[in-house]
Length: 282
Image (spheres, rainbow, N blue to C red):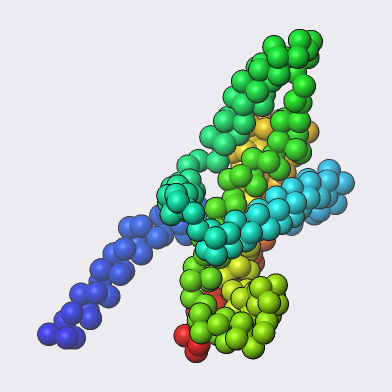
């Protein structure tokens, strides 16, 4: 019976791989990679050589890195501080706020961009209120369609992705260690720096890497607020495929982005495994 059960499970796994994994994941990825390495003459690296030799491509990579580092770094700092405040200084409604942030991550990112437009756009409610209140001729707030607007939208959207892992890491800290440090005369800042931060660091790093990964692949916010000023790698791939109709160039860029995303994801998995093992040993 046990052997038959194993055979049955193996058969189910094979069916799952054949009907789901292969057509929905392997085939599209294989086709993408194959297209990026082929042209009309056959096997070729022309798409990659053109991409990396083009100065505009490096501008795109630089813009992507600039937005990624700024957005993910600020979101990480804000998320860690917010998680620490919610954990150590709880208030009435703090649990509701945490639940809302958990629900918030289910929203599509472009909704944040449209919400900011409704608030701070040229015809947004805040601009209209300021114009009418101070008899202004032009909207006083004009930062939305560019780097500032994209930065604000991504920080708002991705901060909850840091809050949740940080809260989990703080929850797993052994309070006896904290109390021992306090009993030995350590002040709040020393306890935070020498005890809490090292023990929560794996969870904080995991949340930060996840934030970097998701920000790297952001598309909706850039499409709505970036306009023609900010061309990141996802926007460049979209333009090459839908506007220029250059599928080979789009495929090469997509493979480059896929390699970068997988590298960050592998780092995230390694950090989460390390955090799990450290907590298990503790």
